[in-house]
Length: 237
Ligand code: OAD
Image (cartoon, rainbow, N blue to C red; front, side, top):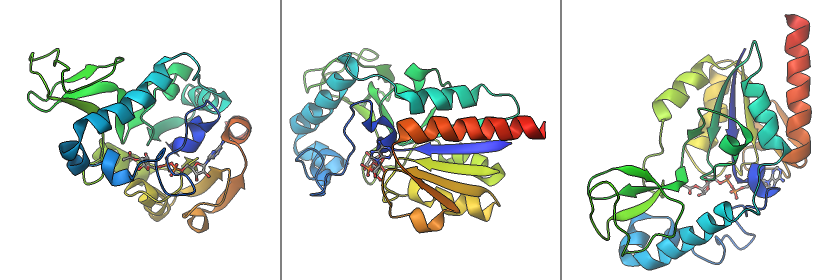
């Protein structure tokens, strides 16, 4: 069985990583275009570095750990009879820390930096600033977070689209369904004949598009759903 899972900020909420959109539409008090666009970075690189430095420090500080939803997906990825493609919009590394391999980070990774001069992508656990030096080319003031900003192309779309076209089951977990192309994956999967399931604390912008929606915290619902799926595939096998 080919399963494609798309995760969003909601899966990491119970791990202590804040979701993006507050009720005021701001990201931790910032306008999205100020901290997540190439023009925002050109206008005020220090502000953008500070914003991502804060999120990176949270991730590396020890208080944020994978939760049962991340572990359940890692278990699913190792199950016999299931081919899982795990796509995340999250820039944290919690899926990897829970044991998932080959995670498709559509929107990049916070623990990597990219050089605007030589293009190298390098590990990054420290704060970035205009004084940071690229470990690959030695350039200064040329590193940026390896994340996708508005107006930029998400990573890995060709492979993801191929996986969606083969999917028997598509599951979206903890995502608001507002940001494309990810918000369109449910329609692609349905077009390919997949069954579709949403797991979210609340109704999302895309809820009406799914065959089934389950409401509740990912940390409870995802392990339950994985148990169900594995029990079902065992019965068939
Ligand atoms: P959002 O912050 O837009 O939405 C988080 C979703 O998670 C909401 O639908 C919540 O209802 C749900 N949620 C919150 N807590 C939950 C829990 N404990 N269990 C289950 N669901 C829960 O985050 P995303 O949809 O991931 O892109 O945002 C998509 C993209 O918008 C991000 O990747 C980012 C941002 O722009 C870029 O940076 C390019």
